[in-house]
Length: 110
Image 1 (cartoon, rainbow, N blue to C red):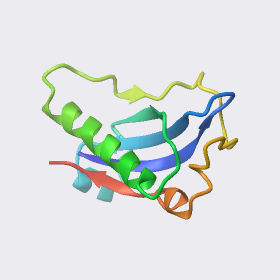
Image 2 (image 1 turned 60 degrees about the vertical axis):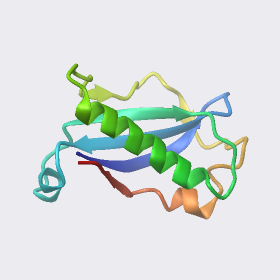
Image 3 (image 1 turned 120 degrees about the vertical axis):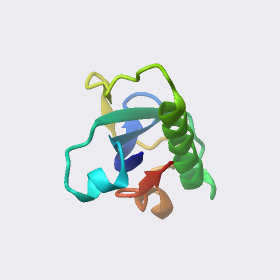
Image 4 (image 1 turned 45 degrees about the vertical axis):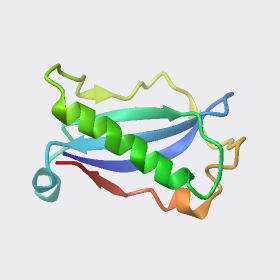
């Protein structure tokens, strides 16, 4: 299973970080140019420090691992369009170069 980070922002009027990840069933599916099999919106309560970008990737890895191992089905598209997103960055997470460097990052679990 492969997840690709496509958006990093904040939830408007909150200090929460918003990360949108497109999900494919496999790296091969992604490489063929298939459309994502689903997506997930991660809402995280983070404080900016040097480990923040790694924390984001780890959180996504944990989710994908649970999703891969789960016998119950996950909703294919789990991003909520009703979440108002912005770039207010009250905790300094988005301004970090390493956080912005996460855009396009691929997270793979087997």
